[in-house]
Amino acid sequence: MEIQLDCLPCFLRQVLDAARMNTKDKELQKEILMKATEIIGNVDQYTTAPEVGRFMHQLVKKYTKIQDPYQELKKRCIETAEKIYPDMKYFLYKQKDRLYWTLKISAVGNIMDAAIYGDKSVKENFIEEFDKEFKICEIDKLRKSLKNGKLLLIIGDNAGETVFDRVLVEELLHLEIIYAVRSNPIINDATIKEAYASKLHHGAKIISTGCDAPGIILDECSEEFKKIYNKADIIISKGQGNYETLSDEGRKIFFLLKAKCPVIARDIGVKVNDYVLIQK
Image (tube, rainbow, N blue to C red; front, side, top):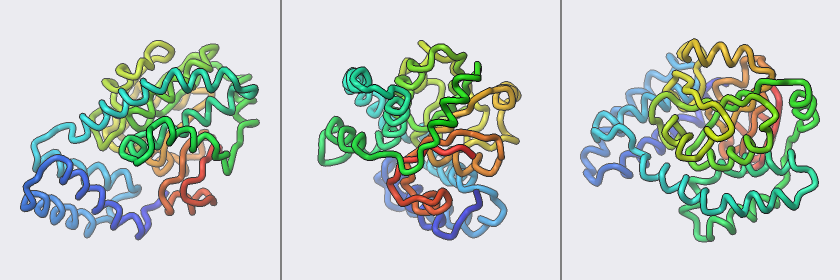
C-alpha cells in the first residue's frame, strides 16, 4: 500500500507524542521533530508507511537513549488485558458462533492502547466495541481455509492485543499455530518478550519476523519467517501496519483489523473505526 499525503502529518504527530512520552526536555523534543521533518522531505525513497515509521521512532531511541520507549505502556496494556481475559472467555462461552466472536475479540484487542487512557473503564470500552459488527466479514472463506488447512500463521500487532489473540489461538488448537512478532521494540508493537508475557506460547510457537519495522517488509524478514510465510495454509494478519505492507502481496492473507486511519479505511472501502475481516 503506497504512502499517501495524509500520512505525513500523522508521522510527525506520532514522533512528537513518542518524544514527549520519553523526555520533558522541550529542546530535545524539538530536535527530534526537526530531524523527523528531514525524513519527511525524502519520503519518496520509501515504499510503505511502516518503513517511514521505523526511521521516525529510531530518532526517539537515538536522542532519548531509551531503546524501548513504549516499554511501560506495553506492560500496562498486557496487565490490563489479563484482568479482563476471564470476561472474554466467559463472553465467548455463551456464543453460538464461536469463530465469529473469537475473531471479534481478537480484532477489538487493537484498541487496547487507547482504551486504558479513556474516560470509561476498560471493560466498558470493550463491551461497547463488541456491539459493533464487522463492516466486511469474509468468515466463510476463513471457515473453508481452517477446515482444509493444517498450518496457521498469525502475524501479531500491538502488545496487549496479544492477550486477545490468545483467545483466538486457544480456539484453533486443532491447527499447528505460529505466532510472529517484531524482531526489536518499535512503537507499542509486540516482540517475543510481550508474546511470552501474554502466554501465547501455551498454544502457539512464537517466532520473530526478523524485521523491526511496524509492519512486514518481506525482503528484510528472516529466512525462518519467509519459509513459514510461504508454507502456511492460512495467514491471519493483525492490525494496520501489517495491512499496509502486505495487502498488495497477493498471498490471500486474511486481514483482521479495526480501520482507525482514514487512509486505510479508504483503501479497504470502509469508514474509520469499522471492523474488517477481509482476504487479499
